[in-house]
Image 1 (tube, rainbow, N blue to C red):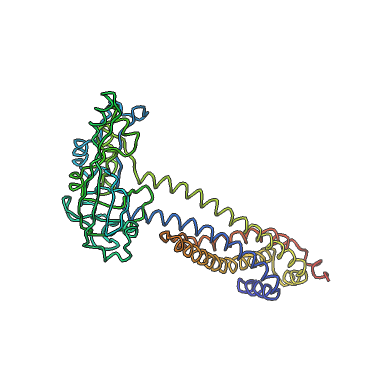
Image 2: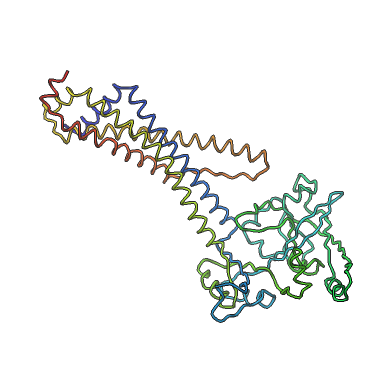
Length: 440
């Protein structure tokens, strides 16, 4: 028997038993569709996370933080320093550092027309405009100097101010109100034994809105709803504590001056390790977005494995249908097998014939299973998009069907079908041709 003969007989047999073949192939289709849709969801989440990290350029970003007094990772020198202006200058001078800036946030009230919104302001240097996230703003541009009298606001703040069209607020003036508390007055009151009645000084400043951003604040990337140039923010009188606990520390004299953390932008990945080691040698701890991504990716691999198991279970159930179909086929085709053997077909030819039939079932089922899986992901995306739009959530494409997943699904479907066809093919090969020819 030639390979052409084997293929012809295999396809002919499957075509002759149309209903049984259809039901068996349908089982494989459903199994592969479940596998594809589950894996597609996991691949989509991974792609989204990697895309967000790349868009925010977090792979070349380090967060510098101070070691806590009881930290087990304090350097051997025992040096624990404050993140102050001197430290910022030293860190900025490390070879490979593009720029570094402290995280400075403070509460403000923003007024525009008759609308007033309580929010949090953040100071950033003009250099961050080089980040991809700030190059393509929702409207307008980023401020061009650290001393500019301009601000960039988030889209959510713009909407809270009653503005629906981003371009309409560009170039308009808004009022930023900050509050200053005289801590010395509070401390003096406590020391004198009387209940202090501190006065809050309100400062009203006018700024021009130069841009509107729509950056999603996720994945550890913090961005407040109004961004003020770094030098301009220094001149604003503001509260120097973020919560009541910090106020208590200030009153008790336990509050340490400095920044909560410093963000470091690195020129490229080749400088990453050297910059990290240099910062740690200075007596500071580091927190890396890149290391966070590795941890997220590990969790996603586990998630993908769980999704794959669900799809595999459905495919294993389908493989039992293949075994049943081929075993029934052996019983019904005893005379055919006897005739083939009498015409010169050996056990290997008979074994190969049934393996080919199992492979054809697996191939057809896998191809249509991939197609059905893709349709399921599109339905899932449509429903997800509808829900996200209704709730005002930024659209997230959480399904992805890369080429490797298509190839893996087809190969996996064929492999499982081949395994399912091994036992029936062995049974068919062992049939005695004399008994088979007498079979009625």
